[in-house]
Length: 193
Ligand SMILES: CC(C)(COP(=O)(O)OP(=O)(O)OC[C@H]1O[C@@H](n2cnc3c(N)ncnc32)[C@H](O)[C@@H]1OP(=O)(O)O)[C@@H](O)C(=O)NCCC(=O)NCCS
Image: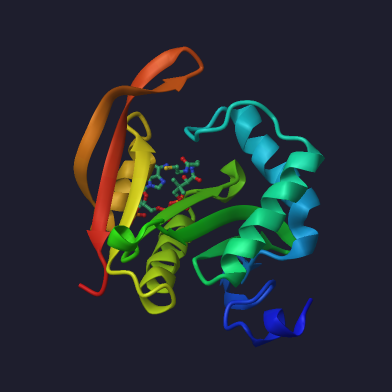
């Protein structure tokens, strides 16, 4: 870890929140360089489950190392924050908030999150999304959060609606879920409101 990393408010590995769920210690912390192995296992588990995310083919260690490196670079530049959810030391979820590129939309951040199956419906998704929006507002100084979701993902849509996100558009059949087409839904939320 470099001196610059140590000075960053949300530098690699920084603990954001810690709490208990069903007697398990849950940690929300920032991504760090040594996360590649766990992150690879994590994403490939979701892909195997065929969850409603954009990726459908397993990643390799080489790709994952590159991904972690790229994400940490963007974190360092102050344009994004990657949050890891750890339960008893194991990566069980990830979240991300990233400023949109281009001067005209640098007040808009994109948020996204996922959890391993065994850790869903415990309230962690709601907590994580609230934290991502807060980081977007307080750290990235954004006023709007943007996200996209599969229309078939009723659980995620319910969560987003509950947290104040509103649908602003959809691309009919914009997503191909292993051969089954589904609308791509776009949602936004005004932050600090
Ligand atoms: C979508 C996801 C992040 C939600 O996180 P979660 O921890 O399971 O959700 P929470 O326990 O915080 O629940 C939040 C709200 O979601 C809804 N919800 C969660 N689980 C649900 C279930 N099994 N059935 C119906 N609604 C559910 C409820 O409205 C709930 O609010 P409530 O408890 O006040 O009623 C999680 O289910 C997940 O990782 N899914 C797979 C990956 C994915 O789809 N990611 C999103 C891509 S856009």
